[in-house]
Amino acid sequence: MRVVRVFVAGGSGVVGRRLVPLLVARGHHVTATTTGTDRLELLRRLGADAVVMDGLDAASVGEAVALARPDAVVHQMTAIAGTPDLRHIDRWFATTNRLRIEGTDHLVAAAEASGVTTLVAQSYAAWNGLREGGWVKTEEDPLDPQTGTAAQAVAEAIRHVEDVVVGAGGAVLRYGGFYGPGASDDQVEMVRRRQFPLVGGGTGYCSWVHLDDAASATVLAVEQRATGVFNIVDDEPAPASEWLPHLARCAGAKPPVRVPRWLARLVAGRVAVTMMTEGRGFSNAKARRELGWEPHYPSWRQGFREGLA
Image 1 (tube, rainbow, N blue to C red):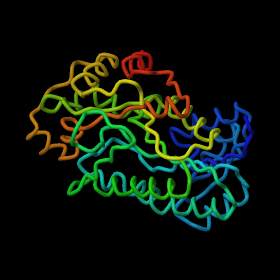
Image 2 (tube, rainbow, N blue to C red):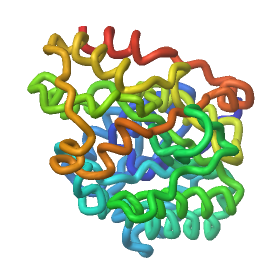
Image 3 (cartoon, rainbow, N blue to C red):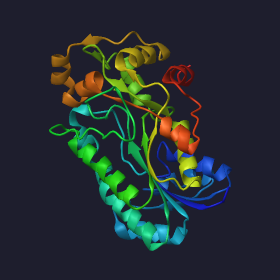
């Protein structure tokens, strides 16, 4: 294994906080960024050189990357916080959409200016596969454009990340729905309060991934200088009718209530109904085959149970 200098943009996020120490443990030199001084010490404790960077400012990104002199750049910049708001997902994801468009452009430009050829970026694959054909999608299947919904801007930003990074010879990791400490706390609390209902028959599929497994796949992509698109999800895409009651049991909550589609659409919006009734899952066969990735939590059944024990 070749030791490299890795620049992790968004190192203090939920994935970054697991990725940085894994890279350090593998012997790599890591520079990790955060948006404010309050998390610099956290990154230092994780073993990284810590830097404040504004991902939406081209000069800030360019300076940070140039000073780090990295061999690889990893894009983990998002701004997703607070209680999930699928009814207004365009507003909830507004800054993240900008980071996936403007931030990606700044990072790729800075990488090219510094001669970096290894790029790895975060994308998303949980329930957002094209709502035609089978219930489980591969990397060859397109993501759902979400045309005409509040999620359209989110889909367009994801497509921008993928087009730009793959076009620059890098790798895009389509992470499944995150769970694990710091990633699913709000969702679990909603389940405990019975504010996360099953919609209709709960037929929509989802693919999950534990944060630690997302981080381990990212390390492999960096070390192997991977190119192309990879679904980073567990082995068991499943409908909401299976995973949501199991999550409730693991959280010590009562079974989720069931509501009809029309009522859910009035209360939570079209995106939530689509996710719970028409969402698609994803296959991890390519990541297992080409990256040699083996998730520690091959199923959300085990992961939810152990994580909420």
